[in-house]
Amino acid sequence: MAGSEGDRLIYVDMNDQSVAIEPFPEDWKLLGGRGLSARILNEQCDPTCPPLGPDNVLVIAPGILCGTAAATSGRLSIGGKSPLTNGIKEANVGGNPGQHLAKLGYRAIVVKGQPADPERRFGLRVTAAGAEVVAADDYKGLWNYACCEKLLADEPKAASVISIGPAGERKLSGASVACTDQDKERRPARHAGRGGLGAVMGSKCLKWVLVDPGKAKARKAVDSKGFAATAKSYSADYLAGPQLFANGTSGFVQTANMLHTLVYKNRTDGQSPDVATLDGAGIVASFESRGGGMHNCMTGCIVKCSNVVHDAEGRYQTSGLEFETLTLLGSSCAIKTWQEVSELDRLCDEIGLDTIETGAAIAVLMDSGNMEWGDSDGAKKLLREIAEGTELADVIGNGAVATGKHTGHARVPHARGQAIPAWDPRPLKATGVSYASSPMGADHTAGLIINPGMQPDEFAQASQESQMVNAVCDSSGFCQFLRPNLDSISRFYSAFFGETVTREQLGDQAWDILQDEWKFNEAAGWKPEDDRLSECLVEEGIGPDGVFKFDVDADTIAAAKVRFDPREELYTVCASG
Image (cartoon, rainbow, N blue to C red; front, side, top):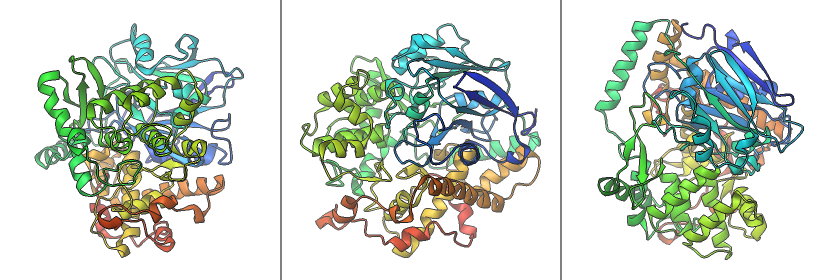
C-alpha cells in the first residue's frame, strides 16, 4: 500500500456500540490530523450541540505522515467541541498510538453518540482485522497508569493505548486524553491536554482505545526513493543544527523569567523568585544521582525532548515535565521546586488533567485566599480528591474560569474560557493576538511567537502566519519541535503521494483549515467582539513599573483573521514559533 491507497475511517456509534469501517474519501487525501478533524467536525457535528451531549463528535486522527519512515512524524490529533471554549478544539499528542493507527491504514476514528446508561464503561479494540467495542466496566475509575498496566498485561508488546482517567470519566472540563509512549513500560505520560477533550471522550463512556498494529509495516511512499532521500537529508540537517530541545522545554525556565513570562502568583508578576529551583537544569543534574534522562516519546523521534524524572529514591515519577507545567503548576502557584511540580505532574497524568488548565485553576484558588500560596501538599490533596468527587476538587477539575466563578475572584487570565498558557501575552503581544484570534482559544501550540521586540504593525501578520504553519504541521503528523515549514512539508508530501504538492497549496490548505474552524465556531455562537483576552491582562501590567500590558487594539486582532497576501517569507516560518 502506497500513499493513501486503501486507507479507511473507523466510525463508532456509542448509542449501540456498533462499528463501521468505511473507505477514506479520495478528495480528503491531503487532510490528516487537525485538518481532517476540522473537516469531519464541520460536516458531521452540529456546532450548537452541548459539548458533553450525544451529538458532539470525538475525532482521533493521526497526521498524514504518521506511520512512515519520516523522523518525528507520529503525532496524533484529538478533536471535538470543547467544553471549555464551546468551540472547535484540537489537542495534539505524541506517544505511539498515532503511528500504530496509521500503519494499519486507519486515518481516523470518529466516535458519535453515547450509551443509554452513563455508568457503563467501554473500550475500543483496533487491529488489522478491524475494530470492536467491548465492555470495560472493570476499568471504571482506574487512574491512567493502573488502567494501562491492567489493559496491556496480556497484550502484544507492540500495542499502545489511548485512555482517560477519572477526570474524563467524570466529564470535568479540564480533562485530558492520555497516550502511551514507546518505552517498554508503555506509560500513559503523553497527553492531549488542552480544551477538555478527555471530558468529551468520557461523555461517550469510552474509557480506552487499544491499538494493536500486529506486524503492520511502515507506510510506503509512492516515490519511495525520493521520500527516503528527503527524510535522510531533513534528519541530518536537523541533527546538525542547534538542539533547542536537547534538555526539554524545562530548559526555557531561565529565558522565560528574563522575558517576564515565568508568571508568578496568578500572573501578578512575570518573574519568579524561585527560578533557580524550578529551572530544568536541576532536572538534568538529577539524572546522575536519581536516574532517568532524556528520551523520545514516540518511535522514530530524533528530537528527544522528553525528560524521564525519578524521585529521590530513584523510582520513576513522571516524564515530559515541561516548561508549561513548571510555570502553571509551579511558579504561578508560588510552588518553589521542580521536585514538587513533578509530583503534581504525575497526579495530573494519573487523574487525566491538563496541567495548564489545572495549574491556572489552583492559582486562582490561591489568589482568592482559599488556599495558601505555595501549598503543594494542599494541591496534591485536591488532585487526589478529583477521583472521589469532592465539590472543590470538581471546581478545580473544571478549570480556571469555573474556579473564578466559584470563589467570586475576578483575576482569571483566559481567552474564550480556556486558561492562558505559560507564555504571557503582555511581553509577547503577537502571541496574545494568537490567543485572542485563534479558533483554538488560548493555546500556545496554535501560534506562538517569542519575539518581544516585534512592532505593533507586525503582530497580526506574524500571528496569522504562525497559526497557518502550525495548522499544517498539526495535520502532517510532525512534531512542532522538529520545526518544519511549509516548504519542507511540501517535499515530504510530494514524495509520499508521488505528485507535486506545492508549498502554495499548503498555504491555501492552512487557510482552509482556519476557515473551517472559524466557520464552526461562528455557528457555535462565537462573536467577533469576544476575540479578546480577560481584562486583568489588559489592565494589569507586569515587568519594570508594570510596563507590559496587553494593549493591542481590536482592529489588530481582527486583522489576524483576514488573510494577508501570501509572501515568500511565509514558507520560511517554522512551526512552534
